[in-house]
Image (cartoon, rainbow, N blue to C red; front, side):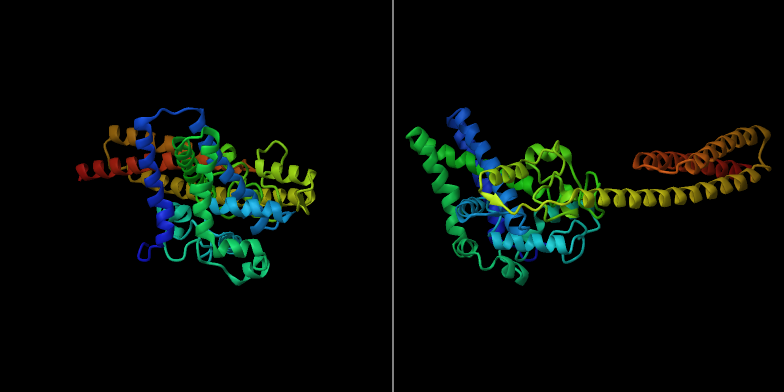
Length: 394
């Protein structure tokens, strides 16, 4: 997996965060934390979050809205400061992710490895640490869509210079402006950097965690919605909806779903700073929900049918095993026969329960599956006891 390390990516994702943590330890040895440090940490985190979601993701990758060159310039500068690669490269990888989701051509597919831990790590950051990762890979489709954007071509050409300026010079200047001291400048640089490092890892959860756990209301595949990540991802956590409707400027389509990025884009439109907002028709959204419900229900019914067949086989095996009790002593025979019959009745009850569900749910599937697993363990135990008694008898 790590035969070809992407050294710039390794420095950004591993080495530089370790350096910042070391500087933090030194800072805490000599200073106490206060509102100044907390403010710059939160600024580093949430400003990075917003420019990734609004700029790299919804503006350039999906063309979900339009804006003027002044706003684009600000997004271009700050997005370089997130150290997630040039916008052209970011958009290219994201385009491939949507086009080839869950296949080998998906740059960060969680299905690359059968081992779930390896799949999680690969989709989280492993794909960037090997080969070209997210820093050099730009496909022709992206160049056709975005290649004429002079700001993005400028960023690509001078990416590391801009990134260095936004991570060192800019926060240090802001810190010096507020405190008038070099210590204030250093503290601003350090805590903005730490906030950005944390936000970088939380952003990667969209590729990893949001493809492993969560709900799937709009489309199948691995993409999922995780509601409790909204406070940390500001809307990128509604990943299942996004995969169903990637061009929509909203990820959280409901008014009550926390999606700060959609609110920012909407407020920008009210101020004339954004226009051409793409919004999926509600009829189409509802149609997707109904289709997904139908598909899910059919999958659950298929699972229940499979479980029913499994129970039928187990019941048949129990009946065969009861016939093997004839040669045992009366006391042993009665005890084992009672256990087998109790299990038989329990399985018969499960079988009737299965046939009674017209519209099963995932909770019902899990409940029935647990009951069958428990019955299997009991049956295996009875098999072992029976074989032991038969061996002693012989």
